Image (cartoon, helix red, strand yellow):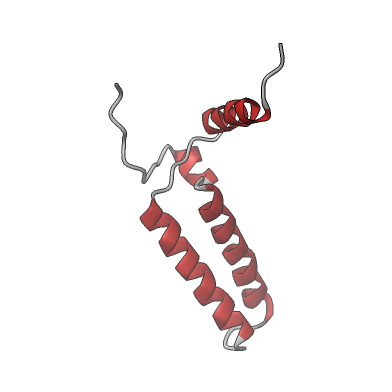
Length: 89
């Protein structure tokens, strides 16, 4: 018996959610994205340069990536979650 592609994708998506539960709310994701954009603007406008500028670029990439996947590794390490708790049925 083989599973359809759609069923396989649903199973994979469920397994991924179990492996990486989200710990960032939408507000948290938005704030991180805005801060990342501001850091990039500061670097590319020449206001901040050198090593600090490169560190800001790296930090902004991390902010964008964590915002896209809704998981912050530091939040997971310290047991923090900004997501609302869903009531179990």
